[in-house]
Image (tube, rainbow, N blue to C red; front, top):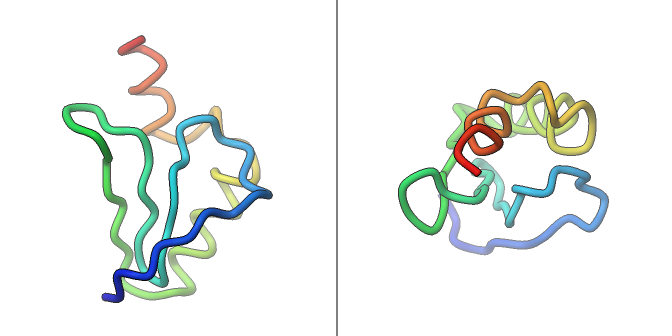
Length: 69
């Protein structure tokens, strides 16, 4: 896994922070970040399309963070 993180300005989720090829970092439940690590780029891209740039309010992490605030 690379460490070249970048932000995607098209992401709509308020808890999204940054990403690299196989990871999406979101606001943390217990620490600074929660890392979502995927088995492949296609799986990460599908998750991102479904939740980060799509219906983010259906994301399990979004729901947990909303309950925490």
